[in-house]
Image (cartoon, rainbow, N blue to C red; front, side, top):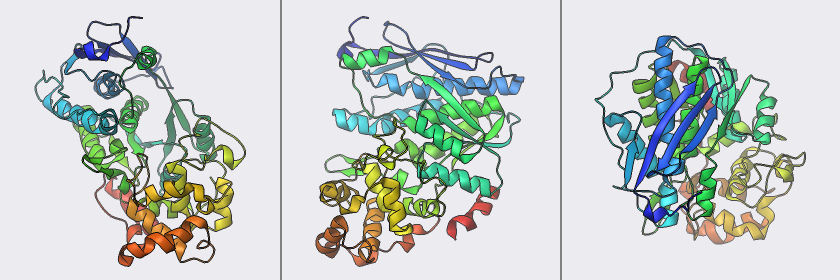
Length: 451
């Protein structure tokens, strides 16, 4: 393979994209300048697919949307100033959405690499504004994304309680997610994704690398899957706090989970209905909830205690003992432990994690970051600082927790510096805010979430 020199590259090209109904394979092809083609494949189980003319058109639009969004994985290797689309033209609305996904979705990547993408990412507009996409004749059924953590399991159980037919859906080969999906007892759909192998070689040769908006990519994959299976809902489980990033001195807000936030959900969901299929609903079921409200919902059942994990470090491992599913030292482990603690008996929570994270002085720095005490919120999918402070204050008032090392230090050192009025959990459990949940479904869910 030719050497990859990111500084010498002038253009990133969307070469072509295609979908085979006989095999269920989408091929997404990219290149830098006139270099070798980079081909990613996405495989949707269930082929062969039989589509009428309207759904064929919707699938073509969905494949192009997937091609454009998935390109973010490759574009970031060199971040060239020119973007070219060889096989088709896009309208202004598509260009605006893509520029949002690339600039904001690569916000943490740019910050960590000392780059600025504002004004640099420009998608070429070569088509007239598209007329609104027609309905594709989809039937009522939800593809629900499962990630193996508490949030998606809360959504799955809420939909089950509301009588919504659903298929539990994930992308890639995680054994942990597969085990969690099996535990639901619901139909499952495991989608395959294979990145172009050249990308890993480019990374070894010094390509820019870092965090990408994975939820945006997975959303586009699931939109394609929904159309192929003829179903009308793509459901994620991103809560309210995903919309808020880390405040970096001298830089401003950088949101690790931008594509889990409301701005992306609103823009992407509206685009799908205007450009892909008018009857395809994309929404997050937990958007009106805080992380603490989700934790309270999860704590109501112990059905998944031995199966779920939100730990990113140990996600590729699957073991019978909880210590194999929770590393116990990453920001996700810290936050999930802290968020669940107010709503769960202590022995149950310690049993899930295999240890008491709040009684380990070596974890002090990690919890300080969650509290935004002498540090900024971690670049992870964790709740807002106020939620962490309120949860810790709640534990500080409880005899079974307040002697633990981290909680005792909070009471002694940090709590006196805080406004007591901002440490109440109850206001953070209130349901509200903007969302895209279909109105009739939300009416059925709201009472259950608020109880």
